[in-house]
Length: 165
Image (tube, rainbow, N blue to C red; front, side, top):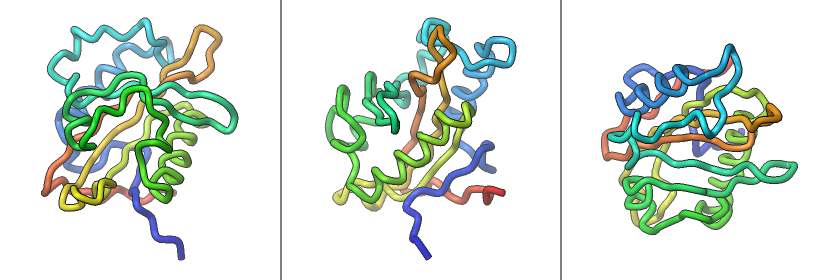
């Protein structure tokens, strides 16, 4: 059996952090008639208090790769460095990155949000746990071209997710 580093689910987990739930509610509010929102639908001033936890990722190539376009200060502090402009493969250890590629790729393919959590990927910060949500954004042609996400970090973040069907 393969050991998973990231627990995921398609619905908000029980006890999800309020910041993640508020970003999700905002994303739902800017969805377009059943379609994912586009980048220009985002209004950072509407989620100003959430911005330290927020990140924006560009989706590039097939198979999809992911580059951090914008990264909030809380995420950068937890990662121990500014990761703006870096690919996930430059940020995460190889095994963790493989799971990120799988899960974020499924968000692109399924065109719906995904929730996740687990132990911090930075060796010196393994005592931390993280929780997050990744939300698809489409371009004018209707393709998922970016992911809006947020993560919270702490020593007591619960990480149990509902099992996927």
